[in-house]
Length: 137
Image (cartoon, rainbow, N blue to C red; front, side, top):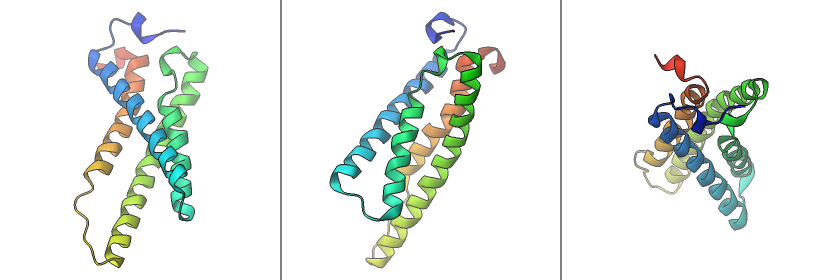
């Protein structure tokens, strides 16, 4: 088993990207928890909250300390989970726009959602390069 502190050849940017992903995971768990406490309205909000909780936990998995076999499985889950996160966020934005249109309002550019998607997709190469820094070159 390897740990990122034992890999001096891993760039600091990769470590920062992973920290950002772990922070995103904590934020998603928080969003899911707050939504559950306030009360979930409709099937999509329930699904989204459950997905945020699971994906948040996945983002905080100790990828650097996993055995090679477990790392491959978890990395596959991370790739699929990140792609699914993008779809969940896009559908969420679409529902928000439809709800705003029903109220006669217009929403602006979905900046928060775009930032969350960026951080989520950043985790796929960050986890890969954390484990295999020789692939960066």
